[in-house]
Image 1 (cartoon, one colour):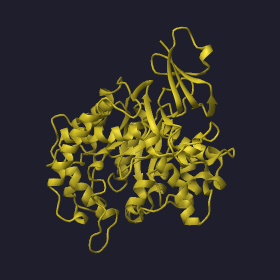
Image 2 (image 1 turned 30 degrees about the vertical axis):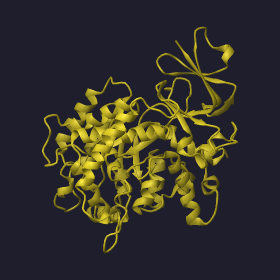
Image 3 (image 1 turned 120 degrees about the vertical axis):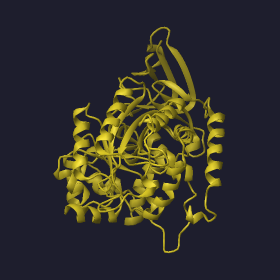
Image 4 (image 1 turned 60 degrees about the vertical axis):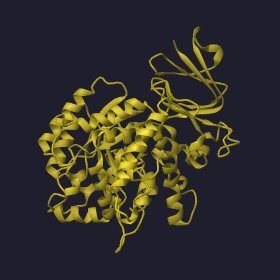
Length: 475
C-alpha cells in the first residue's frame, strides 16, 4: 500500500511545495509529489501538521568509536597540542573497545546521527584486529559489529573498509595502530569477503578506503583502486592533505604532494572521494575538478583539531562537488558543518557571502547559497557513497527528516526559504522525524531503542573513563 506523507512544507526534487505530499510506494521508494485528491485509493495518509519535510542528510565520513572520547581530549599538553598529539589520545580509545563495546558505542553514535537528520553514514572503518594486534577468527568481526549497530538503529550505512599498512614513510609500526594493520593481500581478501557478505543486504553497502598515502604506499594504493574499479565500481575514499606535515612527508617519499601523486597514477575518478583536502595547490584543485572527484569536508572536526580551513571558495569556482562528514564526532551536526563551510571563509576574508560570490557549475544558477549547501549536505553525500538519494526525486529511496516549524530557531520559515533556514538557523532540536527507505525510525523525537542504547553506552563510557589518566590533557 503506498503512503502519502503530508507536511505543511515539502522540499523534494529541488523544489518547495505547500499543500502537497510525498507519495511513497510500499518498498520505500519515492513515487513523486502529489496532492491528496490525486493519490490512489487505499493510500495510507500520514499527517505532519506544522512540519517541513526535507531530504535526508548524508554523513560521508565517520569514525564512530571516536565518539567515546568526545570533549575529553581538549586539554593542552606541555609543548602544545596538535593533530599529531591528538592521535595519541585517539589510540587509547581504539585500544580500549571490545567488539561488544564497539557495537554499543556505534549504536549511540548512529542514534545521535538520526537526531541530526542524518539518514546515511559512510563509516570509514579501520579497527580490524584485537587489542594485541591479532586477527579475530572472523577477520571482519568488527565491521560486522558496526553494521549490526546501524541495522539496529535503522540508519543506512556504507561500510568503507579501511586499509592501513604502515605508520608512515620510513617509520616503524606504531603500537597504537596495532588494531589497524593488515597485510595488503589480507586486506583485499577481507574486503572481498565483506562485499560478498552484504551484496544483497538492505540499506548496507561496502566501499574501499585506503586510509592515506602515509598509511598505504603507492603500489598498494593502486591495487586497491583497481579492485574498487573492477568489483562493482565501488566508492573509493581516502584521507588526503589534512595536514601540512602529510604533504611534506609525501613529497619526501615520492617527490610529489598527495593529490598530485594520485592524479598522476590514475586514482582520481568520479567514484573517488578525498577526505579533508585542505592544503591543496591551485593545480591540485584543478585536477580534482578535471577527474570529477568529490571532496568531503569535515569543518567541525577540522576546526577542533586545528587542521586549517578548507578552500571551499576555490572548490566552488571549479565546480568541485563537496560533501560533509562528522569524522571524529567532535559534533554530530551536518547542517552545522554546512554553515561553517561558509562561515570559516567569512572569518578568513572578513567578507560575507563568499560561496555565493564564488559559485558556478555545481553551485551555480544564482540559487540561494543555503540551497547549494543543503545539496552538499544531502545528495552530494549520497553520490560520494555511490548511492542514489538525497533529493527525494521519483525513484529515489524515501530517506527524509522533518523539522518543527514552530521551533524557535526557524519560527517564521516559509517554503521558499526553508533550506536557507535549515542550513543557517535551525537547531538540532527542531528535528522531529526521520525515515529511511520510507520507514519512520524516529517519530516525534523518539526512538524505540532509546533507553537501551543510552544505558549500554553509559556503561561503556564509565568503564572507559575508569582507565583514564588523571589529567584531562593527557588522555
